[in-house]
Image (cartoon, rainbow, N blue to C red; front, top):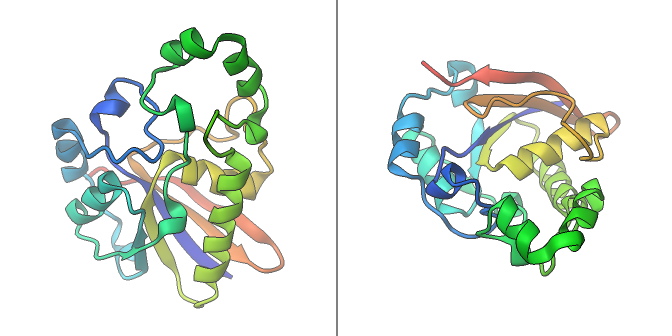
Length: 194
């Protein structure tokens, strides 16, 4: 069994405006840098091997946390296609019934020109399996969609309705993986705030 930790990047201006970022490379906001500057990775996890999404916001978060991660392209955020950069109300106005119908599909929802959460979950699982194969605990600074994918893998949550656990984004979330049991939750919402 291999343990792994996931941390979501700090806030960006698009987060503050409630815009879907996806694979748009939005940096941390000034407020985001200040927020992450108050975080500290618990000592028990600092010696783990760390990885980071290719997105600037994740790389900035890792740097502020004092981590020296390796790049991990498979943990880039979900591609929201034509919905990226838009707020929910903007998407509803532009896509109308199509948006409402798609949003009820949970893990199989696919934005026009984007990818589904099921596809994200599949690439996250491939990354977890290959990284766990090294036999050492590891962590990653990534995105909400990546943590939701791991939660879905661990619980069977189909991403319809609220997640089975409330997620505190100023936290590290600890999972385990083994070939027989798959992904399981170890500890959720371990605070990063000093």
